[in-house]
Amino acid sequence: MSYKNELLNNLVERFKSLPGVGEKAAWKMAFHILNLPKGVVADFAEAIIQASQKIKKCEVCGNFTENNLCYICADNMRDKSVMCVVQNMKDLLAFERTNGYCGVYHVLGGLLSPMDDIGPEDIGISKLLKRIKDSEISEVIMAIGPTVEGEATAAYVSRLLKPAGVRVTRLAYGLPVGSSLEYTDDITLHAALEGRRDI
Image (cartoon, rainbow, N blue to C red; front, side, top):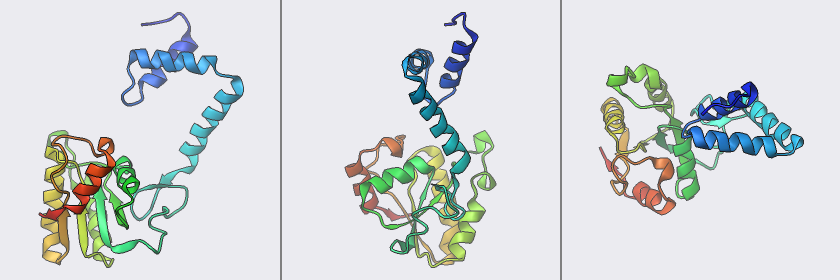
């Protein structure tokens, strides 16, 4: 669908570039924005600009933060001996919602996928290994969804850590195969965390 208004078409294209937003949803959002009061639109745009300019990745774990350390890494009450390795920030937030985990995290930012030319160096495996080596971590929970890429990544990290004497566990298989952690309900996710096993 196209409309004879370059500014409106440009706005729709911007919305379509967001994940999961198709043609109809993009038009719906564009019309919604145009019907909002100008002050509300300005506040919305300013929130996007501020977040883009001021939020960065934690220098330790890769979580989003405005400071050098995220609130989790800066929290002295967290159990620094247990690390939960997740694919992305959405998965980290899913675990935080359960209120059942009090260790630290490491965000990979991706998974191993040889078919897509994504190797260990592309997802920062060396940074993960260095962090574990330089810390008091005794258990690493591979909290990655049970996809082909997730299994390959978990197995690869496990092989590298076992010789160092670090316990490597995996989430229990109460999670549906091929599912995304960010859409898993809190109870299932908490049960999977409690039922983790060695790999």
